[in-house]
Structures are given as structure tokens and as C-alpha cells.
Length: 336
Image (cartoon, rainbow, N blue to C red):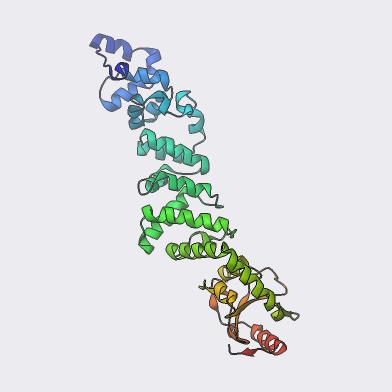
């Protein structure tokens, strides 16, 4: 404790000896003293434990040097104590280094930033600082750990900024909300390359919908009833040379179809399980795995048939002819 707070008294004669010493000039000490405007010999106490001070001093990161001098050795990561920080800095791009130097960040921020760079090698400090100044650092790291393809620190900043401006949800609220939303998408096995899904226009709404999906999918009783009901609905399956009718067999299958068609509907599953309505999918024979149209049947009557973004089936060439042909074959009425 005493050694940490001891002070040095240096005569002018000794100052000159130190300043003119060739070995001293290589330590970064003179650059540090010039920046802070005083002769702080404690720099050398710290240099014994933190060889990296030389690099930081010569880079002009004075705040980081000053804080490191008064930080316990054990509180520092290994790469700072063993002098291997230079290996990490060499991996940074020139713009990253310039951005880091101009920010003159402090020790804690530097350590956290280097952790972010592990997840996103192209991360700029200004983007990192924008996020961590508005929300907890752990949310940024956890969002990166979800491993969304193409998601970078810069894109995280841009989306949080957009949510703040357009959806009136500040980063301190939107960051944890977005994190939980992305985790739910992963749990639901959604397409994590779908940018409209990853960066929703209404984060709160899509988060709530995802929560409902997770809840309903995990509801074993509901899923059991749903599967029993859809087994009975196999009677609606049919096909011609161009289109075919498919019946969903579980709640997850239904939700994926709704999501991919961009239908703003989330209450289908309970109505189907209760026998209040039936939902079937229409696919092109030439594209069997690509959602094309969703049809709602109530009391043996086709009451709704919409394609992507809820476009009515009547606006889709040739599809309406198939609906009429299918309805006639199955004895259904059609009101669409």
C-alpha cells in the first residue's frame, strides 16, 4: 500500500540525466511527461509490471497510461502484463488505430474494446464507444455472441440508433430487447440471414410476437391438440400440375409460413387447435419449399386466401383458377 502511494523528489540535475539517457528515451516516459506536463517517476514502477505502457505512451494514449500506473497488476489482463499487447495492436487496421488514438480512451474501455474486436475484427472504437456509452457493455458482447451472419459493431450501432430515432426506444431499452429477440429467433430456428427479420421495423412488436411463438410452441397441450386437428385436415391436401395444397403439422411449421409470407397474424394456432378454422398452404409445384399463399377455411368455406404481404389471391395470375378448381374438387365454398 505504501509503495503504491509513494512520491519521488527529483532534482533538476537528475532530470537532465534521465532525459538524456538513451535507454530512457526508448521507454515512452518522455512522451508521457510532456503530455501531462510533469515529471512522474512512478511511470517506471508501473512499467515493471506493464511493459505495454511504452506502446501506449508513444501512441499518445495518455489517459490509458495514467490510469494503468495506479491500477493493481492482478487487475490487468495477461496481454498487458506480459507485453503482448503489441501483437494485438498489429492486428488492428490503420483506421482502427487512428480512431483509437484520437479517442484517448481509458484503460477499462480499451480492455472491453479489444474483447469486442475478437468478435468483430473490423470494429471501430467510435462505434463501440457510442453503444457502450448508452447501454451496458455486456449487451453488445451478448448480441455479438448470438453469431448473426454479417452482424458487426457498426451495424449494431446503426440499428440501435434507428430504433431510437424511428421507434422512440433508446439504446438502454432496445439493446436488451433486441438481444432477447435474437436469442428467441435462434431458438425458433429462424433464418438468421433474413435482414428484415434480424432488423425489424418495429422491435417491440416483433419481440412480443416472438415471445408468444415461444410460449405457444412450448405449450405441449396446445401443440398436441394442434397436431390432432391438422391430422384431420389432411383431407384438404390436393394438387394439379402447377400448384399443390399442404397442411401444416405443427405450430412451428405454421409460424414459419406466416413469417415468410409477412402476414401480420399471430393467433392462428389456438383457433386451429380449437377447431374454429383450418389453415393450409399453397405452393408452386416448381418451388415446393417456397411459401406462396396461405388459405383460411371456416365451416367448409374458403374465407381468405392471401399471398406474400397479404396480396389477395385474386391479384395473383392463375392462382385464383387453382383455388376454384381445388374448392370444387373438395366440395368447398369460396368467398374470396
